[in-house]
Amino acid sequence: MEGSQFLAAFAVLVLALAFSLAFADDPSPLQDLCVAMDDPKNAVFVNGKFSKNPNLTVANDFSFLGLNIPGNTGNQVGSNVTLVNVDKMPGLNTLGISLARLDFAPNAGLNPPHTHPRAIEILVVVEGTLYVGFVTSTPNRLITKVFYPGDVFVFPIGLIHFQFNVGKTNAVAFAGLSSQNPGAITIANALFASNPPINPDVLVKAFQLDKNVVNYLQKLFWESN
Image (cartoon, rainbow, N blue to C red; front, side, top):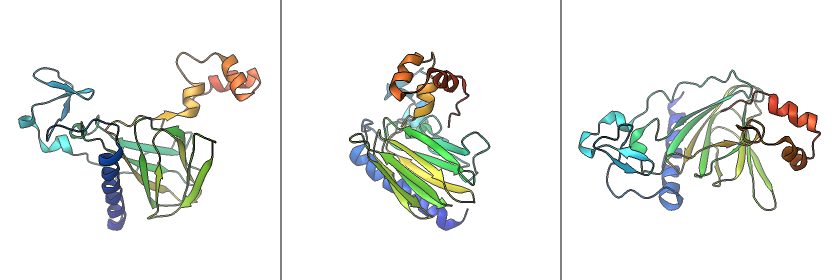
């Protein structure tokens, strides 16, 4: 990937950090470092993670390598999300920010409609052509646009949104999110692949579908991105 594309991705981080400081739901840090760790021995529990002694932190706690490597898009939806959150970079703990690389296969690669319950998302396209959008809560208004390299779009916290490759080549985007652990709820997966399954009668009435259709949808394999 060319240097200019990485500069654009870096700009996303700066913008996301600004959002994080102003709007993040994550608690603000009360100390310089609070690196997450799995071992509770001699550690303090902060914001959902055990935190190691700041004097024992190392550079690897604050780094993630390989975001320049394309993700595998050979799946049902033709996309891949490489998320760098607190589980991938322990140094993000209490900092209220994370990052993702999104790869899309040519001709209709899709990041399906989903929400991030704990984060604003800001997206910059670095390669290809993406049709992106979100739906407001009232009155379910769809806001969409087609984006090209260098274009930026923001998805408000908690709203259903998507990205769709409308080009004939691969597409790549980077996203900054205003939470160390933004979460992701993919709508189709949540409704038709929950464990245990939702009573089909609920979905029949909610979507005004034939019960056979609902039963069919609940038996499908739903790709988790």
